[in-house]
Structure formats: C-alpha cells, structure tokens
Image (cartoon, rainbow, N blue to C red; front, side, top):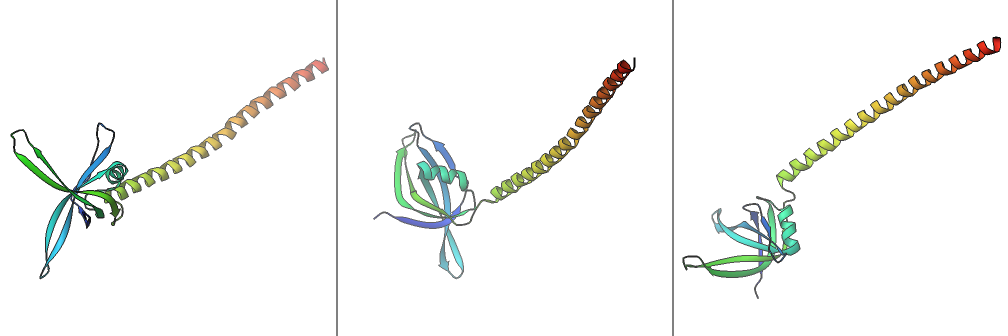
Length: 164
C-alpha cells in the first residue's frame, strides 16, 4: 500500500501552471519536523504535487508558512538531462489537502484593505447621495421660482388686458 500522511508548513508559495492538455498542476514543498530527543528536532522537506481542481484550490488559497495536512501517495520520477545524467525525484502526489492554519497573513491585509475601500465607497456614496438630494430641491425650487415668476407675469398681463 502506497499512502502518505503528513502535517507541515509550506516552505514557499505554490507554483500553479496549466499544461497543454488543459490540466492544472500545482507544486509546492512542505517542511515536517521529526523529534529526535532531548528537545531537538530535525526538519525534512517534501515536494508535493496536486492536479486539476485540487491544484487550483491550492494555488489560490495556500501560501508560504501556512500549516497543512496532506494525504496522498509517493511517486518517483526519473529523467536524463542534456548531458545524459540521470536524475531522480521523489514527490508526494496529494489527493487531499487540508488547511490547518487558516488564511494567509497577506489575505488578512487584502481583506482589511478591501473592507476599508468598501467603507470609504459607502461613505462617499452617502455623501454623494446627500449632496445630490440636497441639490435636487434647490434646482426644483429655482425652477419653481421661475415658474412662479412666469405665472405672476402672465397673471399681470391678463390683469392689464382685462383692465384695458
């Protein structure tokens, strides 16, 4: 049985890309700690690969320093480089990723900035609406005064005509 369960922190932001086949792949690495006794720890680093919808979710919501729990399988790839040297890479192909530490710090900053802009827009919108409402009666009263003056002039003209 090939099954891996790890809990660790991302060492870098995920790198998401789309393949020519249309599939999405995201790669990132996590650090786990092994307690070796006497209060000492040893860090291990693991490369993680996610595919399709999980890859999109990881690319969008994960960030460096965030704690995650990963479930998947081990996979070892090998290839020859341009010089003919054979390389090996073992990575975890994740089929389940759970965020343990909430949102990234910069997401909180982005959310607070967005909330500040929304508040500012609401205040500006209220000021705009208040000034528009205040200016509408003034325009209407000016028009009403012009209409009143026109009506008075018409009545005066009629009165002159009747008197003559």
